Structure formats: structure tokens, C-alpha cells
Image (cartoon, rainbow, N blue to C red; front, side, top):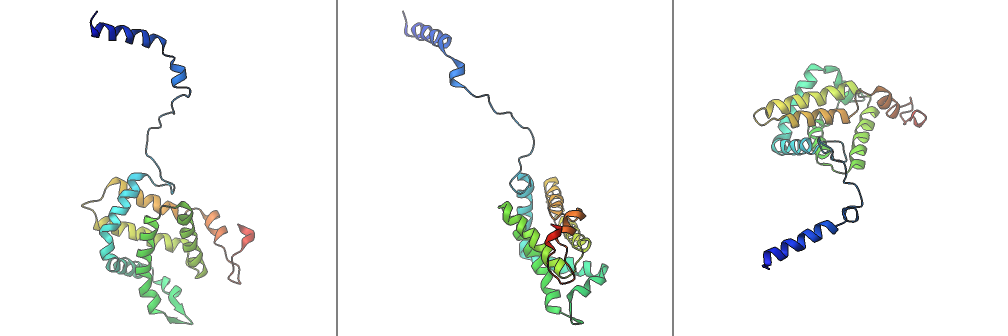
Length: 197
């Protein structure tokens, strides 16, 4: 008897005596086809596209912030009242807001921890509601930023980047009035109304 015939005979005997149920006691997990989401609710492609886009924007964030904010203020001149202290226009806050806005979005995009992510969004709403900035104006500014960035990056823009920006806009919850108005509602004293939460 040759070696190969001996090996094939052993294989036949082994295959008949293998108990598959003992090897695989659990059913295999169900394969879910579709995008994989991270803890903050972005798909991995969206998160990657946002981060790569922001790496291209970061060296120019001061200039882009000024251009976006200047155009926004020219269209919505009533927003200037939010930068007045005792009737005088606070130029330092006005000019610093555009850069702070760009840096804030950079940190939001880079944030991986969902708790910190939600806290950052909550703090943003909290600060702006303290200064009586409407959700409508906040949403318009973010939409202007998205439109501006997509225009600047039109040569390297992708569906994932557009989808990522739309999901980021959703995360700010501008369109959920019962949630945003109850959480961020202030009484006349200027303190948070915890009864509405």
C-alpha cells in the first residue's frame, strides 16, 4: 500500500467521524450588509472624508472663516446685535468668532468619543442661546460653511464628504424644535430652565 492511499483512507475515516456541532456550537452571526457606523453616528467613509477635507482646509482656516463669516454677515446684518455689548460693537469678538467657529468644527470632526461629541454640541447650543442667537442663524452659518467648503474642494469632493457634512448638520439638531427649544430654553433670569428638560 502506498503512502497516498494510506493518507486518503485516513481522511475518509476522519471526515465521517467529525461532529460539526461540537466544533461550531453557536450559529454564525448574521452578516449585515451596508455601511459601518462609528460611535458618533458617522459612517467610516464619511468620517474619513471629513477628516481629509479638514486637513486640506486647516492651513487656510483663518481666511476661509473670514470669507464665510463676512458673506454670512452681509446677508444677515441683524446678527450684528449679538456682538454688541452695552450698545457698542465688540470688534474683537466679531473677528475672533470666525476663527473660533472653524477651530470648533475641526475639533468636532476629530472627536471620537460620543460623550464628548454630544457635550461639545450641547455646550455650543448653550453658549449661543445665552447670547440669544437663534437656531435658524446657527444653521444658516453652518450651511454656508458646508457650501463654501464643498465649492473650494470641488475637485476632490465626494459623495461621502457631502453625506458627512449633511450628517454633521443633522447632529446639531437645528430642525428638532421641541428638543432644542426645551433643552436650550432660558428664563428671563438667564438661567437654564431645568423643568423643561
